[in-house]
Length: 140
Picture: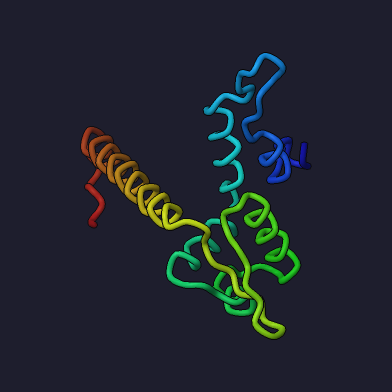
């Protein structure tokens, strides 16, 4: 387990399905999904994936966009590499990162759509609560 109590990306790889002595797959799919989402569960990793959704990037290009220290970015990129979400390409002394699958772009798009719906629902609820208390509705 890592310092936050999770398995971390190294643990994710260990959870890949394998057959037990009786021939059955021993790791349930829902557990694999949970570990996958834990891997995505850091703002810097999400920002990196968003950047790589546009095109491949060199580490130096990502630093100002992600807004973390170089060593921390390197750690986050390593997590994404171990989870097989990104791959590297070296050109001279420059390392370029890209996504391993276009499905990651779709996943980020779907997450945005879900969040937009949740936030719209919360804004509507807030407006209803304020109207019930006689407060003016926020302008939007």
